[in-house]
Image 1: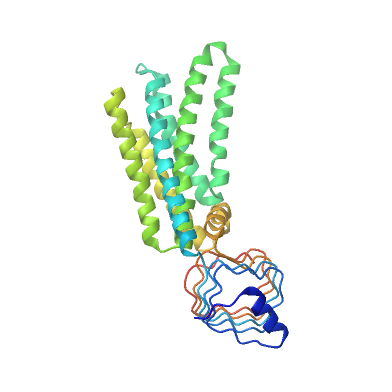
Image 2: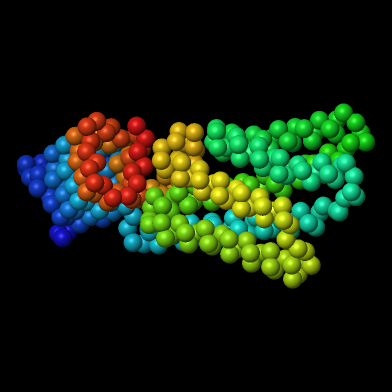
Length: 311
């Protein structure tokens, strides 16, 4: 595979050359350039920048796009680190709730608080599945409003209102950290193979287990069944929503947007490029940014990897 400087390619293009097959274009910048009709087939364009370029009829068959090696390593470390942090935060929230929430007597108040978590979680899941997670978190906002209303209606209800607010806070934090894993997992699938995504999920679960184990040793606390149930439920929900987002479900556009931004940040960029009649047949397009690109009659036959396209 030949290695040519950007200036050399542009100079030869001006002289009428259009054959640039099997070029090593890793990390090269062609921002705003007109390379219409060029044959880049078989080239390595990982990390290349074609932002705002004019690429009408350009041949990108069999190209390899995406992250360069050092960028791929950095992204793997970031994704795994975020997964571990999410696990630690989730475990920490569970510990905090045990230290701050006293054991309530068996009365109507404690019964209401006991059922509050599964009811909030059920409402969150139903709304998230139908309207997306961004709308789903409005359930917890509604819970806070209800807790505040209870405290305002009766001064005697202020302690109970505080317990409600604490329970809603714990449930929403555990839900938010676990739900974030769905977007990170989808980002890993977009950028790499599914094995990295599986490793990331395992990292999350391992971090959560280690945190609770340390907590049990240091502060003599036990794992709350409600937290485990919340964790498992939201984890499965977030992974399902990530899968639905990858299938093009518009209700989960936020999850897709966050995941694609993470996955394509350092990859090959065709952002706002004119790709009319361009050909990406049999190309490998992981971690490739097509945001805002003009994709009129663009060919995608037998491409490898998920194409993060917004038409």
